[in-house]
Amino acid sequence: MPETFQLPTAALVQRAASVCADNKAADVLILNLQGVTEMTDFFVIASGTSDTHVRSLADRVQEELKKDGVIAHHAEGLAQGRWVLLDYVDFVVHLFHPALRSFYQLERLWSDAVIVPVDPQGAGS
Image 1 (cartoon, rainbow, N blue to C red):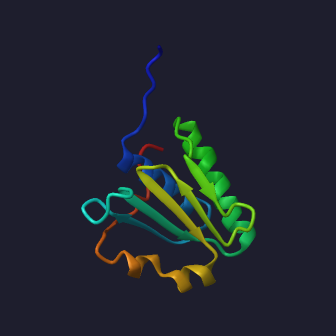
Image 2 (image 1 turned 90 degrees about the vertical axis):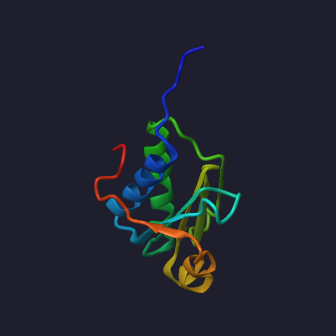
């Protein structure tokens, strides 16, 4: 069986955040949820400017992480583009239309999480 190489989770999270930023997402944020919940280790949260932009961001994140050999375990909201959730098990990417991000305020809901600076170089890119 051939060996496959996968970037560490923290590097993949940075890669996803970088893809969002490179594609003009607003307010890109990484939350480290380790020690806060057992559900997942990280959230990447970003906003698009429209439903179309949110869908496009989701497509780009999936395409770029697939190049690294990582495929989303589950995706929700792609058809509507209001709130897209890409579940990579160890991390989850949340892409919002601005009105929904403001309404749900995940950053406030998960305020116990540590905010991780987004690497402008996009770790692993």
